[in-house]
Image (cartoon, rainbow over all chains, first blue to last red; front, side, top):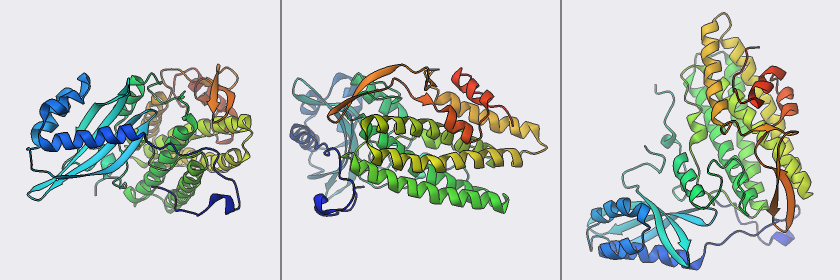
Length: 130
Length: 266
């Protein structure tokens, strides 16, 4: 929940921010989009190539639930970071399919962003739901 | 009426990332960071620390409101204290949201954990206030006292004064917890024992395996904060002076320092 835009900070009386907001890396965003497009296409090998060993089982289950061609749009609806890793929440939509919500974590090694964990949030209230 | 609602009943904006504690720890551990978030060493530690506190203020506001709702038969003065706490915590959440903006962050930049809410799961109002007001708010006294000292080392009076303002309220909340734990269990030592045991569990949980100590005994590390390098405590310390002001006894504080996490009746 961002603070409301107060306009030009320099014109506002009072303390000014002492640091800049960290913008998420463009390569991370690109990797997320590529992953979601790959998932929607039903390209299992492609998804596996973008997933670290530790998350392959979970990601495989998620990929199995997404029928190729069922979804044609995605929306990144949430983002949160822990240091240099990013958690993303995305919703896939299609004309004949109920929305599919997924939360996953991306981390970077040697310039390559891969999925480190993934959670199917469809029909769950949140990532807190046990 | 359902008491002790599960954490996922809490309303949050859809764009927030909500995670169980073990997933937070795993993500931190994989990056070589202290998994328990006791003292993050990453460059952005001030942002993530403020964010964790801000989330804690929201959950504390919800917890006090829930306590008010869950125990309609509790004394009127108890309900008034809980209502007051809701108001206090909402101001704190607002203050920390502004502090987040001040340190170049925003609420939602980091995931929110559920561990604080797990500390509210008590059926008895005496245990509820022992856990929340004495356990969690006692921890808040420690964390805020440390943050004030960090701000002083940074030469940042905005953070120092804002956090000091919030700390004054937290001291009052601990006092309220002590008062109600005593009053609600008067003449019922077994109930008092159960309330204390609930608080002990929370104190143990946040003792980080006995890794906490006093301000005087704490080791120090160098930490970069923006363009400055300052020396800070290597772990979350126990703020004896603030806890004494809040009404904890010397004996209780000594037990915490020794890692026993047992709170004596007083």
